[in-house]
Length: 389
Image 1: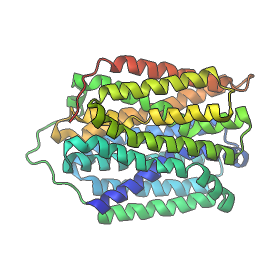
Image 2: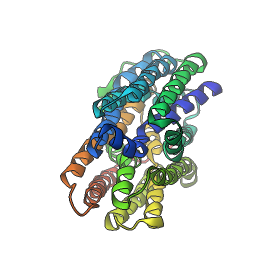
Image 3: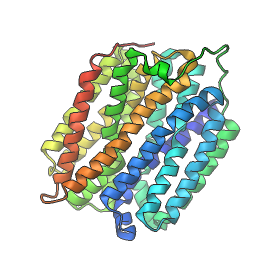
């Protein structure tokens, strides 16, 4: 069980890498393929929307087939996507590649959560979920300065070929080493409609939809163009900034679990963390030209406080019936991931519509967009019921 879970952790590192690496590749893809910021926002959005759309069949597959075959088979699709990316000669190829990679990454986190929910005591679910996201966020670190150095050494195409090989290898290891948990005996009938009818989940769905999108969208793409356009940053400079933000996200993911046990609440921990994230967004909006350590500190604090994703899933999981665990956690994930895809399309259009002097105008609009959506999420989430295990 432990070595199989380690393989899923490694796969989730790749998943986090793939959702964040476009920020570092922005300058080279712009120079070599003529990819605009809107093209890359669309490609990023397609990754998240494909990932989200796959949550429905993934949830059913987890309950019926199990996490081993579900994760291994789809991760091979992600390896194919990396190959398509490496061979692309136009922005359209990048978009197709991101669709395939999004499908490939879609079952990994939920396969781990499914095993946690079925094989471990409920009280440790939040901690295990946070640990998986925290370790997975090492992919954010890999998709920063290390990726920039790899591109310098072997080119972006060489780096993608290497990623394709690693992705296929991890898929094979999952197929061999992951062990499916025992199935729930005499399962009751149930569907996604039963979950959607549970009023206790509604404010949690809203929080899932709107709290992860800002941190995922900024770290996954917009930090790169923001630093390049506003501060004239080089790829290595962008790599350093994204590295710091990625490290902060790792720390935040690990911090939420122990804080839950200390404070004995999920609802108010999530509210407090996201209020801090909202405050940092307001700081970025008010001071878009600050630069230096001021902007870096705001982005780092935003990444740390905004890492509430696994705790929100833990809050929702506490309301799920056992026979709908797979479909329930994937439905929660659908809300969290799908909203990022939609946000990337919206922010891509905002960027194009405000691409005029002053140079910071597109990013001021993007920051304001996320301020409004996160504030709305916090307001609605205050109506939720607190529940710990």
